[in-house]
Length: 274
Image (cartoon, rainbow, N blue to C red):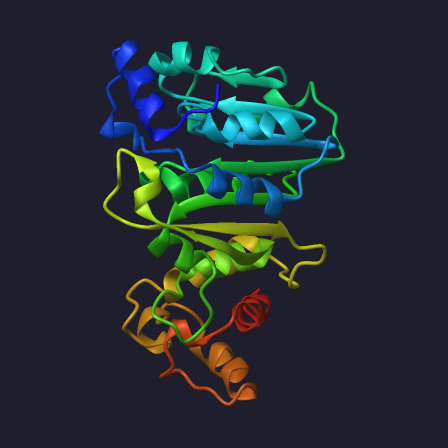
């Protein structure tokens, strides 16, 4: 069953379903948006898709049709009667918290050429989900997610913009990040307070050279600790002489703020601190 806003409300009422703020539940019902996400994701029968937070299954139903298989993680077990009414022949739904689940173990039984994450992410745990996908060292080829617009803008932010932060660098190191489309808050039930954005994160074939990732990410995090302060202030516990030497090569000095540096310069600094 594909739900319109009206019959989704009716179905949820029949099941006495109550939207839960603690799970960030906003279900998308606009078929045009769903089809745009599917089409721009370039999913085929050689693709295993991970979906986080299927909700009432509007996106899941379409993923089920085009992919090799869908593994969906839903924390809210009260959605089970709703999802069971969907015509899902090619989907496994795991009713557990994605953040606590051993995803690598779940993927062992599947063998596909590509693994994608495609999801309308709960806003309140967007960043922890993305970080888990990376830190669990899952071999994800592409991530296509709908997120709060402000967060999505940070994902794709460039240096010298107000949105640019340590997360921007973290993602840029692993992925090429692109905006797919803007999504109005009016296409959800219930309507959230903010608009959304769909972003695509495609795994880089070759990453920027980093000799020690732990040092690199700590450097970036520390550099952005207090965003309005200069590197000289935020990195005072580092070897500032070495850092200044790298910055001079790029016509910069220690009075610069972290938001001015691209990923490549942070990597160069980190490599010289070892």
